Image (cartoon, rainbow over all chains, first blue to last red; front, side, top):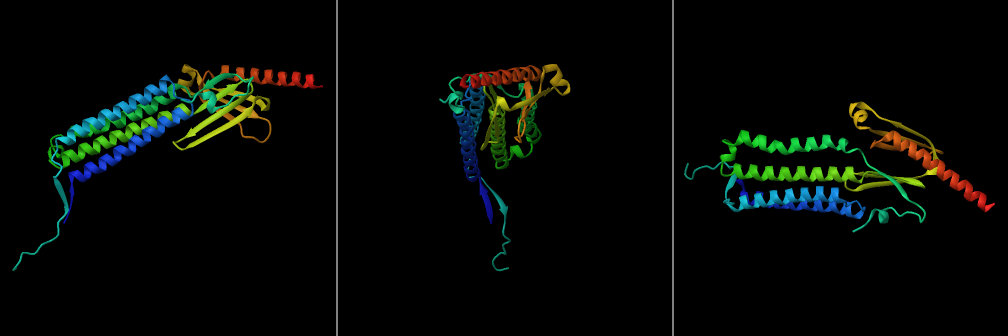
Length: 84
Length: 182
């Protein structure tokens, strides 16, 4: 039997969140290192990061209400009843 | 915080005349694309509201997927903006610097001395280019070097004239300097 639990999916989501935040930092680093952090680029980057944090926070609050022990069975092995 | 002058060191008597980027209107299609991509989970969610979204396992899974997808689109938009914003052409009284950002990890900086400028051509193409006055400026250089192209910059015809003037002025200053040496 192979089943996936919600907690595993939440873990995958957290890894993905970390990756996207790393990319946001790389983008901002590019702007700073090239001397291009102006009011416009700061505002756009700030807006993107703010939206990302709002989304992550909303999803986090939603995940907090979940029963993460829920599982979904992908493959079920065929079992033969004993004494059959 | 680093200033542009640290990223592009200038000579003591060198002054920045123009800093050119693509016209902001050329970024509008990308904004529209991102808005469409952002709206997709909401549209799909509206169709699934009474089906899989009500399921105790698939509902949270789809919400996590939707959240991850939205984060991906936001990261994509941020990368597009940085790519747009870091593409820059700097015209000084001595040279032209072409800074090209290709993706997140590739950056090309090329320079051209104004003395090498042979021919400058400007063109506006299309309805938007004509109405909002943006287009390309092609700079033909002496020698086998590839030509410089400013793409979709505002006021291309004005910039062409200014580059020709700056090139002429630079050549005149060099000639006077050479006379002084003799």
